[in-house]
Length: 118
Image (cartoon, rainbow, N blue to C red; front, side, top):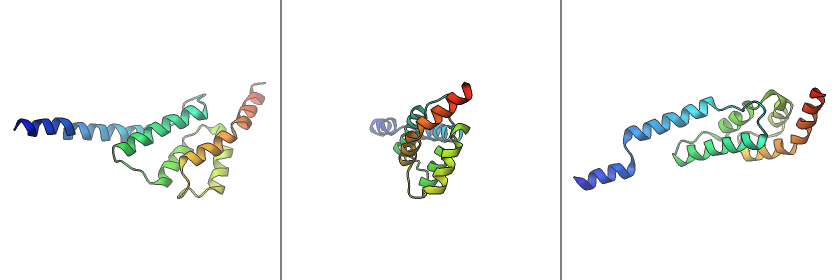
């Protein structure tokens, strides 16, 4: 009986697993970019969430994670998000490739922001 309890503790209780799953799905549903957040920070937060989901065997479809990543960027990225939608196959690309494309265009975003402020 004691070994059974040790195994349960090592595996984690069913309630603990359900709570973790609920927490991860809640984070997924509520994920969005923060005001003034750099693309690097946004990507790293998204990457951490995706890794947590994968580690706990809660996979989202590639297209769902790509859309989540793109559709929760701030409006200043809308032009580039449109370009991604038009040029990338969201069923086969992954969010790291999308990030690389967006990061490449960071300078343009910063210049547009500077023009608006000036």
